[in-house]
Amino acid sequence: MDLVEKIQILTDAAKYDVSCSSSNSSRKNKGGLGSGHMAGICHSWSEDGRCISLLKILMTNICIYNCEYCVNRASSQNKKAIFTPEEIADLTVNFYKRNYIEGLFLSSAVIKSPDYTMELLIKVAEILRFEKNFYGYIHMKAIPGADDLLIKKLGSLIDRMSINIELPTERSLKLLAPEKSYKDIYRPMKKVDDFILENREDKKKYKSSPKFVPAGQTSQMIIGAARENDLDIMTRAQGLYDDYSLKRVYYSAFVPAVKSKLTEGIVSPPLLREHRIYQADWLLRFYGFRTEDILNETNPNLDLKIDPKASWAINNLDIFPLEINKATYDELIRVPGIGKVYANRIIQARKYANLSFDSLAQLKISTKRAKNFILVGGKYQGFNYKDPDDLRNFMANSDADNKIQLSFLGD
Image 1 (cartoon, rainbow, N blue to C red):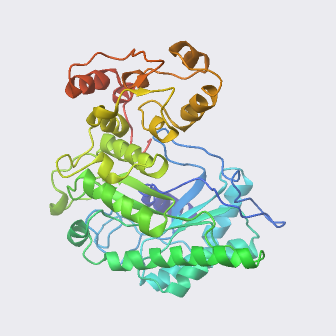
Image 2: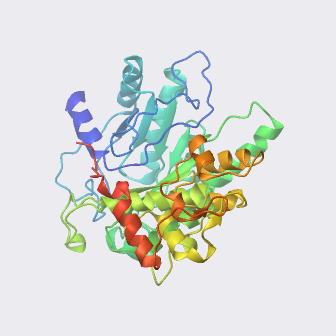
């Protein structure tokens, strides 16, 4: 099989992996190729929000596991291929020199064993770092079940590491991927977190200490494959952020690309649901929300008609409307339509004078959505709703992002 055919097979096989992210690393160039620094990644995104600035590829789609949801499962009749570490290193450098990419995102099916697969990934990183003098951004997927020493060795060579949680509940994992276990997934996650903390302490004592995954670790979760609810998904994500200090959890709407009795009836990926989950995740990571603020056993799924922040506000109308001139920063960022930039702008401006709706306009602060939840100088200019459902319907009808046609893979 020639190299071009391998590229076609293994780039196509990698397209369902969405945890392809920008750098945020601090790796410096020491006279070689590329940079993994914060500006080292061209922040290019496909129309549906996925990063396209990296060479995104699988080492191989030959797998020992037979996961029901995976296009690369052992029983799949798809054409199989495998790169050598040298081929991947050469592709990365050649594509970089042609200005096609700024880094490498490498994942792999599990060939022979987790340890064997990890050794191949490490070999790629060693060739790039030591033989090719490549200092660009490298993001790799670690293999659950691999030896801790291999995890540590790979982490010392790359910028970001991912270990996929796969599915949001143990029940769904046992159902769709019975050969995998949360124990094997959580152990390397914990080790990576421990190694990162250990490395931070070493850096305080010795500035020359080698870096360990300076851009942190991430994970990916498939949604919609086992009919789990959004509460299950967000609870799992919250636990990952709390317990393993993950930089980010990525969510991939299940694509029924392979036939299985266990996923019958799922005919298309739940893209709007994926979109809402990403919005809820943003609230967890940057706005101080907890899963229990957004979802509960009575309402276990996100509202597809309005975004999670607006839904939370409507469910908590007893604390609204807030007076803009008195609300704290933490209160302001929970108002739909007001983010961190607007909140800081309001707090700075009101040091000098009480704000009015006109002064908000002069500060270029849009109140299109926020006006339903705020007072400005004691005045309310929002929708005069009768009850929460009335406001919910009003916002659903006026919310522009419901009118966007979401695409999945951009092809």
